[in-house]
Image (tube, rainbow, N blue to C red; front, side, top):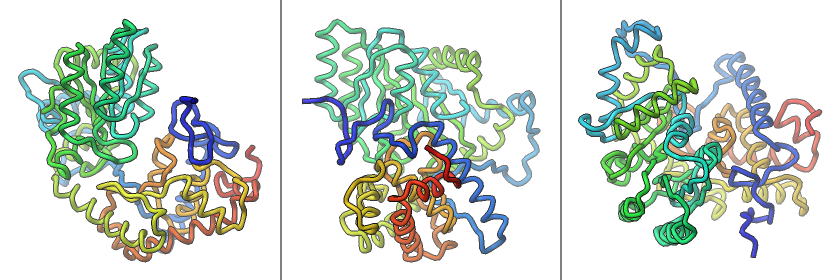
Length: 430
């Protein structure tokens, strides 16, 4: 039996991502080109005035917001001199850290934080075992590859234990366990499993990096779990564009002070540190955070999920915090509506066309357009702001737009020229 992962159509996954690439969207370069076309559509809608509004339904907040009366200069030298202590206090508290033995650092992205920590903590030839509810984020996989190490991904305590045993039997050096409690697919790892995996990792002598991009807030606010560094781990990182924080899109890394010192030095050498001139907005983002906001975002998402289920039935997948249309289901719905039986595209490409139709025709910005490359072929509906849904016109109107966008995809998907025009705004893409 082959170990190669496949989608429901039997297409093998591409390297580094949990889906198959195709001829329409075959690389990260294509993802970037598609994003450029999405930007042109946003410009056109905003230029159209009030009738051309744009609605952020990505579940992400990536703005630069300053509090009223803020006087700190937006300057790379002056801002850290004035705000570094306040930022450290807020960042450590956000991560559940002990100021006596932990430190923190801001990176230009969550991906940069994971990459730099991995490069510091993993040596070429080491083995890294991933542990998550479904699969580790591609940024973890890519970081381990950059470090020249072997990566083994696992789901569940038993699979993790089996991977540990296999690494020991092969005489491999297990340097790091990469733990994810809230997966890309938005399943949550139960606290008891987290504790068991941590105990097994510690017994094996491994250090632990937590990719806590959204889990740093969702775990405590929704599932009553500890904060990131209240677990016995070495390093944890979260993104400030997710679920209760409001941007900018930066990565907050915290953990063992000695390790953070090494990671900080490497981060500056690589040029992936956050610009200190952004610190006033970071301090504001952390200071305004309240767990209730996460609960409100999830409650609004559930309202939309109920309407989606009434419309699309079991084609809607749910996790405790999201509703999803899998890439395979989006493709199948488009094929059914187009009246075709031969698959004309990959699931990720169907999702891409669907996302572009929502953006062009309804001003809906989805998370598919925010992730480069996307971490899943599914279209996720998550952490929807109640005020954005109300401004759009409510859950029924939103699901109407989703339905209409699937029709738009269906009209395009069997014709390569029309599909390319939907994705890229032209007809010369291969």
